[in-house]
Structure formats: C-alpha cells, structure tokens
Length: 115
Length: 236
Figure 1 (cartoon, each protein chain N blue to C red):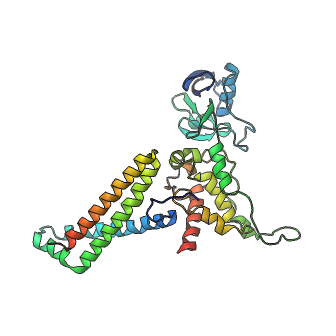
Figure 2: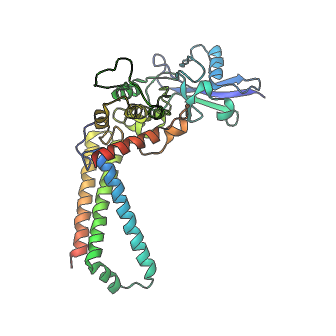
Figure 3: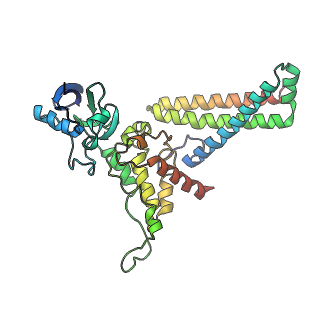
C-alpha cells in the first residue's frame, strides 16, 4: 500500500472508476454537441442560446463540466507523479492545475446560469 | 560475408567515468546462432565483458537484456529474429541501475515481488495430507505460475521506469494474481488491500509492452485486468 493524499479519490480504484465513468459522460456530451451542430447547419444565436436555456441541457452540461474537472484532475495528477520528481515542483504543478480546474468549473456554472 | 557487427554497452564503475558502446566484429560462419552464443564469442575476445547467464535454454531467466531495442532472453533469441542490416546492439535491461556492462541491479524488481507475498497463505487448520484442488481450480493457475522472473516485462514498462519504488510492475502483479486465483489461498482481502492505492496496480496504463516481450508468452495485462475486476466487485 502506497500512501497518497493529493489524488482525487484517495484510492487508485476510485480514481480509476471516476476516470472511466467521466470518459463515458464526456464522450456522450461530445457526440451530442457534434450531432446538434451537424443537424443545425445554419445555427444562429437564438437557437444556440435556446438550447442552453433548457434545464435538461444545463444539467447535462454541468455533468459534463464536473466530469471534465474530475477527469483532468485524475489524469494530470498521474502525469505529475510520473514525470515531476521534485516534491516542490510536483506540488506546485498540482496546485496550479487544481486552481485552474476550480476556476474553469465556476466559470462554466456562471456561463450556464448567468446573464 | 558472415561477419556480424555487434555494438555492446560497456560500463565498469571502477574504471569508467561514463558508459560507452564498444564495437565487435563476430564471425558467425553463416550460422543462425543465439544472441548468447555471440556474447560468449565476445567474451573470448575480451574477457572483461560481464553478463549473467546460467541454463542457456530459457529456464533460469538470468540473461534478460535489451537486443536491438527489445527485451528478451539472449539464450533463446536467434540472430535471425533480431538482427537488422547485419547489426546487433546489446544493452542492459532498461530502467534498473547498471552494476557493470550488461549486469543490472535487480533489487527494486525483487523488492516489488517480495511485497506481493508470493507464497501460499491459509490460516485454516492444515489437513492431514494436502490441500486438494479440482482440475478446474488448478487450470486457473496456468499462464501465471510459469514466470521465471527474468524482468524483461517490468523493465520494458514505462510505468515501472518512472516509479519502480511504488508500481509493482507486470511481473509482481502476475504473481499477485497467481495467489489471488489460487483456491488454496485465503489471504485474498489482505492481498487486494495492498493493491488498491493509485500506484501499486493502477499505474498500469495497459500499453502491453509486458505481453509483447515475455519470453514465456505470458500475459500480465490480463492478470492485472482480473485483479482490477476483483477489486471492483469487492468495493462496489
């Protein structure tokens, strides 16, 4: 047993499961958005804005954003522990990544529910 | 022209400040020899050449090395399967500290193997004669017990290169599953608990270098997948 306190789920098994489930959510969201764009070749602002005004789309989008945040944290945490051997550099990288993820998540919520 | 150009990694920590590649011309007389034969012929030319070997028939696992970029056992690798453009490059197994020439320090590799407690554990009362297995239970150990610990797989794995002190590596994990799959072993929960963190098992990214190089044709990636399934069904 190797101790870790900066990975998302404090467990390799939970990180692994989160990574796979979030990947499925992101794949579905990507397929939906690409299909929507293909079926609306002359997309205007009103239609696009109308899509995101609906509650189910906001829930779906927020689910995708949270999945993206979790997926990015698990993935980049792994990259940092593979390649950054100096503890200070590694922790610094992890702090910047978690801050960026937090900012993007809050910003995403603001975009969905703001204005 | 039956002269083979062989380039060998040389390093003697007592006299060399850095490793270097030494060139040898070896006359194979047109025969498709094993790489180990070539090393023996090199040792005839230069007796300071150091490498491990013992059984010379792929059973002991001593002569694992990197031949033209691929790990394998020198004794059972014919020249025809590795030599390109009449050139052979021999290097020590990657990722482990070099002690001298092609001899590496296997300490980290054995440490991870030891961590997997590779022996039968059963805390129930011992039967009068032996713990019996059905033929079906015995079949589950096929493809697991044959490992000879040559370290070709673990030293071809980037996850093991980056974290050899934390990631158990394919060889150790194959042995972990060998005892998890054994009907006579009942330390399953303790064994699974040891592997649940983000490094020990989950640093495997499934690139299957281990499967590609195993001289015994074993499949550590499948064993790792099976352990993951056991962990998942145990914890969900």
